[in-house]
Image 1 (tube, rainbow, N blue to C red):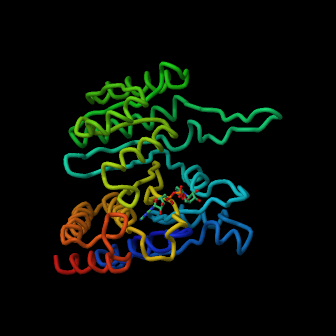
Image 2: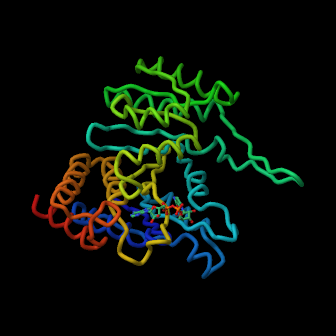
Length: 321
Ligand code: NAD
């Protein structure tokens, strides 16, 4: 039996992940869902946001469905999602954006760069080390090149090699790997890329870049899909996989029923695809489109439908298809 570890987390994670589970249960009712409580609320209750037992449950599962975690205002614990990505070695963060005339994927290196965790404070400054390793770059470049080849597409390498020595290594290795895989490729400075992808999104297919640049670029490309509530993502390693909406816990709307569950539901669809159910994943995407076309939308998309009503509408379309 397929086992999915479900970590709803905090805030709207507790609203959009149950929505995704409801949709996935309509398609694959025999999956086993294993709840894993992680995050700020858990930390407030028990003094621990994530334990080695939680990580073991995630490692044992076939995949993890993750909501979002609130960063404590006091800065008391290290980022839960960063710890999970590291422990499960989820080195590739795929952030697709699909909209009219747009079909692109940001492939973000997920374990090093400016998020390597090597940082310290001195009396008059704070320092964060940006690590770009040959191993880390080769494996993310390989993932991105294979994806571009599968899509019959092309690869854009987002970098800042004109300024950063670490990106000279990233650019030269990504170029070499793209050539090895015979994938058409081009290099773009990341700042120019952030503007050009908005002006000419149809010119992009797979974009590979380092950790922080990918984090920012994927929020920029999110504009093309209608905002944070629309953006799913996959975190992939060689042995484990975790799927999560790009957005955070949105404390400003948590508990109001205003959360858009599409990002979480599409993350579930990416999980289906990853586990070998591509047709079912397509059915979910089509069901969401048909509900949106019927004018049923959450407030972030200009509608007045709440999270549960939207989810029920998608379920109904799936049940009738
Ligand atoms: P956020 O993504 O939570 O919210 C940004 C804005 O977008 C808010 O106005 C919010 O209401 C809106 N929004 C986000 N998702 C939405 C949805 N599904 N439907 C409708 N509107 C939505 O980012 P933030 O406000 O910068 O962060 C809030 C908390 O989430 C912080 O504690 C932050 O650290 C955390 N965070 C966690 C993750 C994660 O766990 N992966 C990622 C990002 C932020």
